[in-house]
Length: 451
Image (cartoon, rainbow, N blue to C red):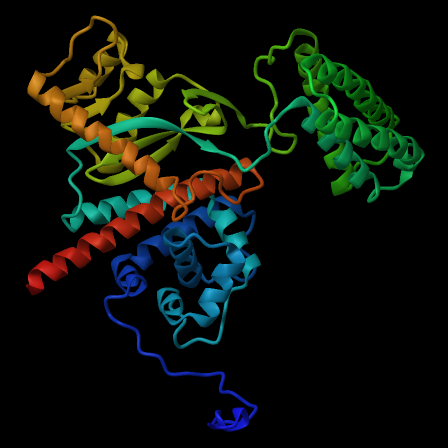
């Protein structure tokens, strides 16, 4: 048997370069050839021009960074993982047009470019790709089926004890980084924060009944309120609040001005206040009552999902504010017309969107077969045969939503710390779903033609 030192031809040193041959039918290679990069780069330039104050300075590597966005769309990876793949994985380098380049984007560059593109940029990319899929004969926009769903945020359950405990932590952490007037309250806040920490612990471990939890909750409320009053007094005394951390403390105090009455309302009545804040940093999030078994409430944003011949478009409903399905019923068709230039021949939606007003609007939008499920004793606007066909098509929207919420596309509970990032992740998941579907369809076509 060979000695371990004799098993390597290169001694203690190993080569760090390799010549690799990539298969032509690799998913990322076909994706690279499928996308019209010139059109996407022009879109990205327009988006950047609309956001930056001056075009002075070095421009981004549009082609390479758009490839990074495409990579993150079809693979559930973080920005650091994207950096690593692009640097060391040949198909990813091919997708980003870096095979003959020594430049590699780092995770910060990819993140900044993604944030600059925003959710509106991702939505434009997706719409352009849907047009490309139509030109290739992969998509027929004559049928539109829509539904709504919740995009859950990756946040803890928003109970009152947790919110007050988090407030105390954030204030204590923030005060360590500021000086001036804030130095006067650091000692008092530190003592109050210790009491909050003990009360949170007592609530979690020792308060077993509702009455015990309510008593601890009220003590916690008054202690956390002391921290808020100290912070308010300091902020109103005319101290410097120009630093980033001081501005964050000011924002946090403003949020708690709204949240404390909501917490007190729950402690006194046992009912959740209307429009309750459920997260201290992502205050735009809200509770979405779904009535599902095992999950009656979801915390996040409400989206409308449209399925067009197997492909998908998604829209944040009413700018993220919780609203009825009746509004999205019309919005889905208008977005479809904006993307494809004409209304669908057949449109399906559940009974949540049914109303005589909506039926009238859909007729005005020139939808031929209006398949909005009737509510109550109302009748279908189409024949029974067409209604059955629409029911089957609409059932497939749930399958699309399930796929989007899978670990591959990560629509649900994305790795995001802001509502803006959640929206970007959602639109990127729609783009990734469509890109992957188009690649699968092209591969099947190639397989059948080869047979």
